[in-house]
Image (cartoon, rainbow, N blue to C red; front, side):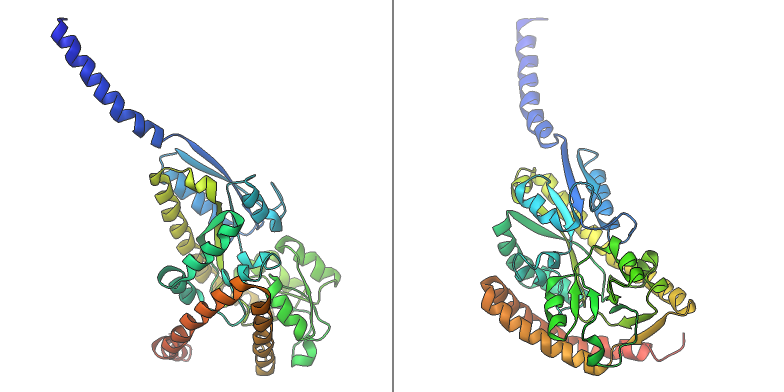
Amino acid sequence: MDRRSLIKNAGIAGVLAAGIAPAVHAQAAVRWRLASSFPKSLDTIYGGAEVFSKAVKDMSGGKFEISVHAAGELMPAFGVVDGVQQGSIEACHTVPYYFYGKDPAFAIGSAIPFGFNARQMNAWMMHGNGRKLMNEFYANYGMLSFNGGNTGTQMGGWFRKEIKGVADIKGLKMRLGGGLVGDVMTKMGAVPQSIPGGEVYQALEKGTLDAAEWVGPYDDQKLGFNKVAPFYYYPGWWEGGPEVDFFINQKAFDALSPENKAIVNAASAYAAQDMLAKYDALNPIALKQLAAAKTKVLAFPKSVMDAAFKASQEVYETNSEKSQAWKKIIADMRNFQRDQVLWFRFAEQTYDSFMATVKL
């Protein structure tokens, strides 16, 4: 080979090396761990993290993998935010209101009594100030949030005795999903209990709980609550459209390439949509099966709903005095919600109400 060819080939090699190196670096393998707050038995809500993980792996061609760990494997169900904040794990999949005790504002990122339904929550997060305000708040914990799913409006839970009025709430030992609804129920005379979903059945069976709420027909049937508590109430006025979130350590996210950041965004959006669709598809079938098994499906009396609404507003006033973050975020949320309720009163509610009366 002559000298001119050597120089030419060396130049091409140099250009190729310069062009390839950044691409190789951008596609360097990434391995994360994600801790869930849910047991593996719940393929819907726990499964949301698996859907997310698979989507990340598929979209990255296997270059970005996230291992998913059920509650208790790496840390307790309610310890996952500490894990993300401390950097011992890169991500978690949980319900923000579990961490109400850290600051009341956590609950607004998921569900508050008489808050949004699922579609309204999504609208506020994506096209209102929801995600922006919540991530400003979560920055105090070294993390940011991505939509990790929604259950839709939940049921009001399983009761060992019938609820005929507010008096029947007094002294009731009830498992509730978050501290906020616990504060409201305390005002109504109940004795709230915070217990992970995997332990609720035994507590109901032994009588250490009088009542328990979890999610809705599909999950509740899998956990067998109908076998130990015959009365199934609706609606879950404390969870009109609870968002489940992926919390990701800020430093871990910042270290990702632009491509992998885009993958996280896309995978979380897909997982979120998939979870809500799955619940909407599976809940009707489970509810029919529960009714066929002699479950008594009942609406909360209006007196209970009215008392719960009043107690909720009192708790919100207290929270505004305790937390500036709560005060700021809930003001924005309520402004957005007023217009959402106004809109849903017309086309949505009228259509749904009519369809509930006709035979298909």
